[in-house]
Amino acid sequence: MAKRTRNNIVTTSFHYLVKTTKNEDDPANPIESGFTPNEFQRVVDRIIDPNPLDERDDDVIQRIKDGTDLPFGEHELVDGYLHFGRFDGAYYGQQYRNNILGTISADSLNLRPFHYLITRLRDGKIIIGVTYHGQFGDYDGMSKCLIHILRGNYSIASRTLRSLSGEIGNGVPVELTLTYRRPDDRPERQHLFGRSGVIAIKNTEFGDDFADQVGAVAERVHGDVRRRKQILADIVNNGEMLELNDEDIIGCTAVVREQGRRRTIYLLGENNFATKFLLNVQFDANGVPRQDQVRDEMVRVLREKIMPMMN
Image 1 (cartoon, rainbow, N blue to C red):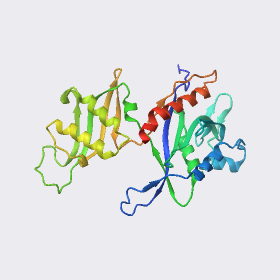
Image 2 (tube, rainbow, N blue to C red):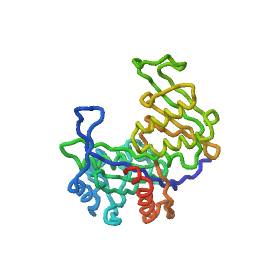
Image 3 (tube, helix red, strand yellow):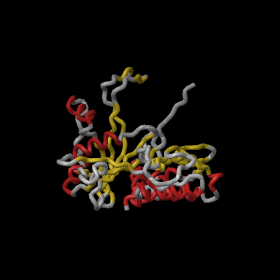
Image 4 (cartoon, helix red, strand yellow):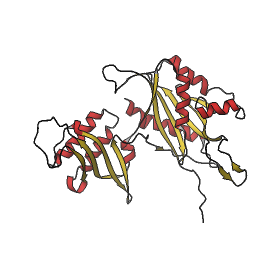
């Protein structure tokens, strides 16, 4: 018998938008700059607009599907600079069946309510937090809409914010898997493991401070990549089987054990998904979370978890 399920877990992820321009000296790393107060005001003007969209109008429906607009709901200004409110994420493109409404066509626009928290930092970065209800969320739609509003004679990039210490949580790191590649022209003797490969380091082989070393990498994940690689290189070199410089390391994951289960944390590369923080909220009879609690929890996560990463 199929079980009745409800999306009674609410999480939030945070991201930020920046302008990018071509870096002539280093094309792989574009120059980032922030948005002006006047540019950010264009976002504010849209999310505070109380006029609802006509969701039966074909042009409006197409704008929502194209990502140039979204239905925004209630708006609240928190502490004079944090914009909190509701928006509807759009789902379409696959036919399904509802026992009351019958077959729902793939072209129909299905809207789910979510919440946002938006602000502009002093350096011009625009921070965006959005909620997820179970597996459902729509940062993609939100980011496309805001990028459309902010468009100008520059490119705009969306950056993902990750907190590895938050992802590790109460888990215990038990293994590191590290991918490396050493330059062919580096003058050194040939090592047992060759110029490139993948190695695994287990906590039982490393010593008592293995978890502390992995935690040190996690705490610095919001810092520069070079510092993280230096710490990882130190862990490997302490094993006395392989010697690596920090620039040799191209990827790294940690296996974390918690309550008998194992999960993988990406310390370097390979994973662009934002960290999702659990929100402590209550729900009404329709499975809708209390908006005031969602607001307070999103503000808490922003101040306790996100802002330290931005400093």
